[in-house]
Image (cartoon, rainbow, N blue to C red; front, side, top):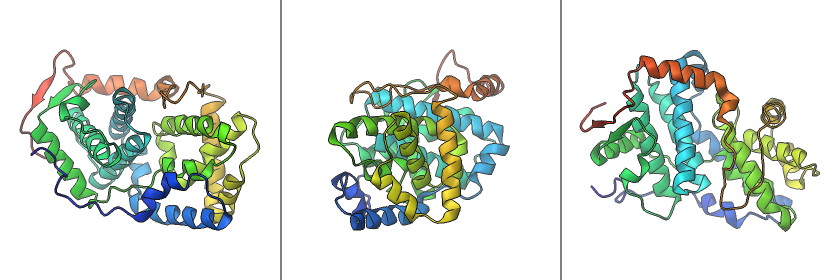
Amino acid sequence: MESLLCNEVWLMSPDRACIHANAHLPTKQDFDETFATFQGKETRYLPQSGYPNLIHTHHSIRNARFKAVTWIIKSQTRMDLSPETLFAAVNYLDRFISLSQCQGWKCWMFELLSVACLSIATKFNDTTAYQLHEFQEDLENSFSPNLIQRMELTVLKALDWRVDSTTPFSYIHLLTPTNKTLVEELTQRVTQLLVVSLLDPKFLEFQQCVVAIAAVRTVFQDLHLPPSDYAHLADTLIPQDIKDDLIRCQMLMEKLVVEDGIFLAYSGPSSPVTVLKVDLFNFYDISLKTTAKNMDLRSSRKRKMEEEGF
């Protein structure tokens, strides 16, 4: 089976193709309509409502998620995948875990899930076709193509084949149209901040548009720039209860920048994620090391998982 998805029809929504085409929207009406479309669509691609509590109360799942997201971020950089692929893969991961709970899963199961999510996201967001073995670096285990494809199918069925996710990254070009000389740097910096926020499960409590707006505002403040007209308009479009969430979310974003010293050194378009301060989350790292010892990872050699079932 050369491609799990080659015979599948992707029911792509029309607004997906407009993300970049509408990067510099000329009118408030265009902005209002596009923002409302994204906001209405994102609710169909969120994890289950109890997911933040699941992550908070089950340390093994929280640690496994952190490790999986870290691997996805590193793989996106190593393979030069698009940011859309990165955010989509993490979205699939979170939605699948929220649906399946994954309690009692072993380390290799989460690794297999991570590979499957990244592979699926790559198929829908990158133009380069990758062999499955190309994904499998920096893992404790290796998996046969057949097993990865079976896991892909398991994920897709669980997600009801809804893969055209709206993520915080979907809003970037909508929220940052400004002086052309600043667009590239702003997009770069907002992307970096959003990538690091993927590691912290606290941001799972917020809607995607809230995370995006909070990141844009934080970057504008860090650069000592006046808020863009479009970011201000976004604030006027959302209800009061979400505005309260926006305040809390922006405080978390500012903590990443100010207190934890992340950032945000602009280094050019060839490196979309130049700073990944994993040490900001040392409490996760310590837990991961403890969990690794208890889960018998056998890091000295890779195990070949040929026909493990689920």
